Image 1: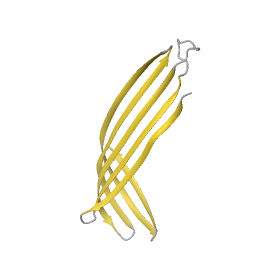
Image 2: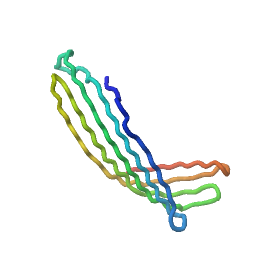
Image 3: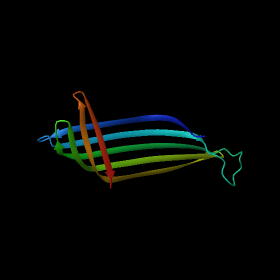
Image 4: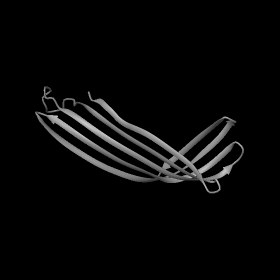
Amino acid sequence: MAVVLSFTLAGFLNVWGEKGNGSGRLTCCLSLTESRTIGPLPAQNGLSSGLSIDEEVDTKQFNLTLQEGYRFYESDNIMLDALAGARYWPISNCLTVSALGQSRRFKENFSWLNPLAGARIFATAKEAWCVQAKRILAV
């Protein structure tokens, strides 16, 4: 059974700002995750059940989302924004398999960029309370 040995780093940053006349919105979301998993692999067909096969997986993932929003409706207690932007995901994996005193390492790196469209609504219930709902569609 493989075990997550360490969850080295994880973080999330969300920056929201206004520009111009207050109707435009710029949002930046950033997250970074790194983890490591180690453990024996289960017996495979055709291999002796006494053969020990170990694996180690290192994964790094980064996510950056940039969105521009435009407020097209605003009242005393409801604000509605239209959003558009892009999300960038680079991922890196490294797999090491060990058996019979030998090890093999396999690496892969890939990334993609996808456009986003969505809407966000703010509703104030009382002076000190508000609710935000956001729906983003990756195209």
